[in-house]
Length: 272
Length: 272
DNA sequence: CACGTATGTATCGTACAGCGATACGAGCGC
DNA sequence: GCGCTCGTATCGCTGTACGATACATACGTG
Image 1 (cartoon, rainbow over the protein chains, first blue to last red):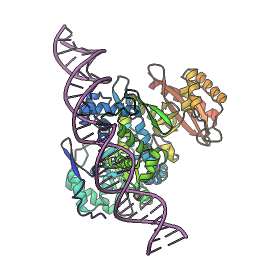
Image 2: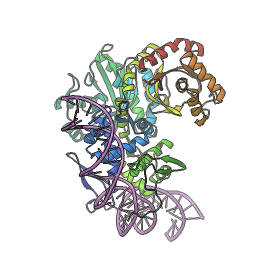
Image 3: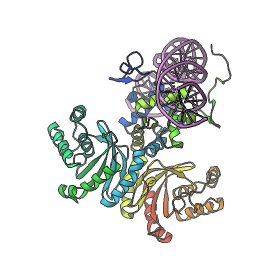
Image 4: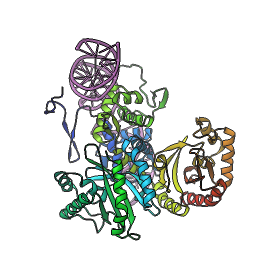
C-alpha cells in the first residue's frame, strides 16, 4: 500500500484560516470540532472574560457558529460564565492538561529527577518541551520568591531567546537552526534580549561546546537561567531542563560554575 | 423528508451517554464536538497512550467517529502520536489550561497571596477550586521534598476527605453538605481516611467553629494538610487555601497552632 | 505458512446535523 | 423616545459528518 511519494491523488485539501493557509491532511477533518477549538483558543489571544461577539470575531467564526460551540463547551464544562455574564475558559481544561502530563512518559520520568534537582540546587527548576518556535513549560518547581507567571505550566516563551531554546538549538544541525531563527519574530522581551542573528549563533555555538546554554536577563530582568537539552532515541532534542536563579544572589559566572554540572547531569539522565 | 422517527423535535431533549442520562439544554448542542471531547476525556480514565480502538471503546463512540475526531485533534495539536504509534493527549492542552489560569480573575488574585504564604510558611501551599464532589488543584507551590502528584495542577481529590473540601463544606448549609456527602463514593484513600458519615460531620462542625479544617494522613500517608475556605460575594465557598506539611517534622497540634492563622488570613484576603 | 485476530486506514451513499442569515427582546447611553 | 449592541432563538436548505464496511498490515499461534 502507501505509495507515499505522491499524496497527490487524495486528501491534502487546503483550507483558509484567516490569512494563513493550513494544510489539512484529509477529509476526515471535522470542521465543527475545529471551530469549537478555535473558540477556546480565542482566550489565548485575550486572557479575559469575553462576550460571544468578541469570541466570534477573535476566533474568526460566524456568530452562529460561536454560539453553538459556546453552548456545547459550556454544557461540558470547557467554558464557564464569568460573574458578569461573559464567557471564560472552564476548569475542565485543567483536567485535560492533567491528563496530558500524566499520560506523557517523558514527563512522568522527568518529575522525580527534577524534584531531586530542585532539592540539590535550591533554585527554581523548570522542564520545557521543544515546540518549534517556542518552548513550552511543562513542569515548574518554584523556589521561594516567585512572580505569577513563573508558577504556571503551559507558558510558552520564544526558542531563540531562552536558554532552554538555545540548549535545544545546539543539538540541531545548522540548517534547522537557521530555519527556526529566520522564522522567529525576534522581538526583545527585555532590554537585554539578544535579537541579533550573529550573536544568537554565537550563543548556540557556545552551547554546543559547553553542553549547556544560559541566558542572563533575556526574558526576565534580574533572572539568570541555565539549561541543558534532553535528547530522544533519534538524537533529536525534545526538551530542556532549566535552573533559574536571581542575579541579586549570584554572579553569572558563579551560577554557571555551580549549576551547569547539575543541569547537564539531569538532562542526561532523561535522554534516550 | 423529516421523517418523524422517534426523537422528539423539541428542546431540552435527553441524550444518553453510557448509562447516564444527560440533560442537554438546547439543540444548539454540537454532537460532533462533544464526541471529540469524549475522545480526549478517555485519557482521564486511562492515562496512557492508547490505540484508536481503545479510545473508541472508552469514549463510547463508534470507531469511525473516534477516527475522525482523532484526526482532527491530531492535526490541531490536541492529540499526539506516541513513539509506539499510539495516541496520547497533545501539548496544546497545556495552552488551554494556561489560558484558564490566566483568564480567571480569582486565580490571578490568588497567586501573589499564595506566594507570600509560601514564603512565610516554608511549607507546600496549594489553592483548590470547589467543584461539587471533588476539589480541583489550580495552583501548587511546592516545598523541598515532594512526590510526583503533589506537583500537578489539575489534580482532583474528593471533597469529603480532604481538608480543603471540609473547609468548604463548613460554609455550606446542612442540607447541601448532606447532599454532597451522600453522593460521594467515600472510598478510603489511605487507612486513615475518614469515611464514616458521622465522623465527617463532626469534622465539618469543628471546621465551622475553628474557621479552618485539617486532615492528617487522609489522602497521603505522613502528610498533614490544613485549609481555609475562600468565599465569594454571595457568601458561597468557591475555593480553599491549603498548607501541607510532613508529620515527620510536625505534630498535628503544633502544625495547627502555627499555620492556621496564616491560612485563614490568606483565605480571608481572597474572599469577596 | 496459512490462519485468525488484532490493528489503523480508506471508501461511499445517504440522512440529518449543523449551517448562516435573520429576527427578536433586553439593556444601555444619549 | 431612538439607535446601538448585546445574547438568544428560529428556520429551511445543504453539504458535513455519519456508520458500515472493505482493505492493508502486523502480529502471534498452532
